[in-house]
Image (cartoon, rainbow, N blue to C red; front, side, top):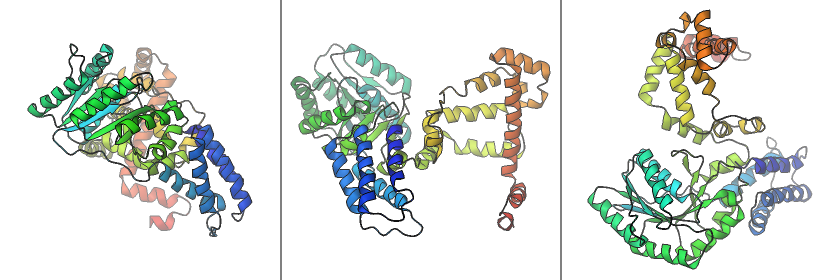
Length: 447
């Protein structure tokens, strides 16, 4: 995500490397590189020019402090302008009313149906809501079936009527159903087209007028770049929607839509899709996205994802097991499963400051843990709980059962033993102090 843009912005800031002060000449050169990077990312020329003009104006005449280089100062100015370009503040959704009604709009293939299910998952798990999904794409039976499959997958009821070709009637009946059956959120998925047309706009306008939703959300495929911005503009002129949802932001996107759409339609980006799983949905935070674009990571989002997956009571139990040196392979595989639930591994690593650049050309498979899981699952329950009993013959059997070799089994067991020792040391304050006192320059702190 934004990998190419990040590289080019980094190159732009290198123009100032070695300069002791900001001048009109070196700023002009850097700003030119930034503008070129934005245009390559499919940001409209008008937006790119306004953006870089703001940077130039704020950079010129700035006094560079002794502790701050011109490059660092321009990075800070660019970060602030990126944040402003994408909206500045995080925009929350309106959850008032009973039921709260959300209407989805967008072109066919933009990801409306999948996002509807993701939003239901988000509201159910993080907001404690009881959502009802509504299938109003009366032209594609497959879209109705898809919503039912996703609804069953996430445990959310779907309201549909394959016999009816009147989406307005279906939406109104769904809201009545929600009121009488204790659903406090209604999410209406609508039909899309391959291009904006009069029939499509008239239909969704009629649905909006009939159900008066709390929010109409425009769902757009971020991989379509500048075309997404143009489509958003047309939809907004007709529907006056409340917010934008960017799907497929984890793909090979140049980022133009995320950077341009807010300034073109003057509506906030509210959510971004970050993967195919139903929980791969994040609220959009302009500041955090600016951090990631400039290669600063996004440690806050990383921690939030971890908090969503790790149970506090389970963590306490785990800490006790580590302290007693009874942490076993069952606990180990449990932790791997929790990490996998957090999302795409490479995306997660990119959230850690400095890791994005380090992993740029590293291909991290989403199934990176598959071999480890296979080895552990090939162990007997007794072997998982008591790894010390795993002798040579057991290792050969485990290797055969997991489709690996004895060397890989040996490596995993060795790494597990080392990890267990380190974890136990980290829970022992006395050992930690001893370890710190031996580190260069840490003796005084240890005391």
